[in-house]
Image (cartoon, rainbow, N blue to C red; front, side, top):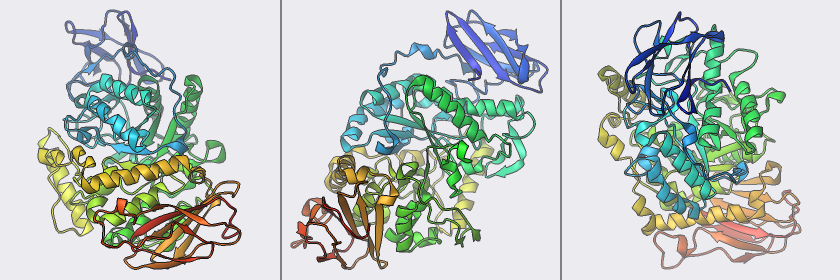
Length: 621
């Protein structure tokens, strides 16, 4: 691991290192206890270093390239005064970790929970999350996935405008706050994942070009010039990014990283940056003796993302499966077709279960070309699925969650479709109780021209979607405060019912051997026209089966239970049971508690019912 930034080693000793390959000189400007300037020594590979033996944690400092203007450390570990302020020396050994026995959780066992620190609680800090951890654990959630915390401008941001990728957001509680949260999670048996962004850096406070060629004009991204991973002087850039995962794993005891939009990272070199990160993390994994998970967000529908480098892949352990979301959402929300025109057939949802990628080499009208490749055969725990996430909600003009777009019965169906899949599920904060507060896009820049650019950019983006309403002003503080969870709702009325529904589904997933089998070869899907489908999963030995009967339509659907060797089918969950209804009808027609093989049954509208048998079923397996 190449140590960059301020590496405090104790007893007042700190090594300062910065990469600036085209600069003639570098000066360290210390501000505490009194201002002083210290020349740095140029060493190999374009780095400048100096060791100072009378520096204490909390000391503020800048770097001055070629003796000019003072700038924050690109690898700063803390920016308490924001993106324009001085960097601060951090003593990572000061935290007394209590998780010495923590070895992590198997990825296939995770129930991920995507969380935005600023809007999860009214306080909006790491430590404010801790009192809610027990409630999440009781629901069955065992892994937080925290939206980016790298230092961004102001106090309100999704995190994707982060600039200092080694620094922890000051308004969230900085390094100390994040470590307390991770420790508290591990004490409860909960893993912590962190969202990191390596495809661009935010514009405000971005002084990286004052140090070196961090950006590359050869490639264009939605945010401007690409990160320089393969051009002249790219070695130092690669060091900066490939060491960043090690920083989070080692100093903050993070269990896994989710890498934002890897398709916007360009590297034509022989040793891809993702391979480099994979290899360096595997070395650290052995040294630490615990699992370190790497998860990609990718718009490529390319199985190479999750293949090992030895097999010609990038080496990610898993990737987000957008196609699952698109295929299900369009069938649940009638307006979904306007947003995802390539989807809308029940057969596509079936393929999402059996194969993974739905668009896997076919012509995709949205892209106006053939797209993707097959992911059939890859186990379910190499994919993360979701019914919505920060992007799916926040990039709607009204910031609407699924709970606002579809009715209560369809919400239950959506939850079951997600949690009964062979994939690793991810919930967006509040989803487990049907939170209906919006989640808008918000920023807190200090530069007027940038604020106006963001406001106009959002208007133009939504105009392209054909929405007539203007989006909320991202800079308006009310846009942020309106997005804060209404946590107290989780114990009331329909929200309590939904919470119990999620808890029950997660418990089934945790305790039923059938639902723990991630091999997609042990799964079949029967399509019931365009009205519903049957998800038939079995244990690896074929001795137990669970049928999940889904009706997504507003009319009853007939289905005959599989025969061929099965004994009776026993019902284990029914979304039409009165305990799961928002309003109980005077007469509720329930499916039989026990049914014979081959028995025809009528699936109620907008419902999901689970049946189980412990005898082999000859068909369809």
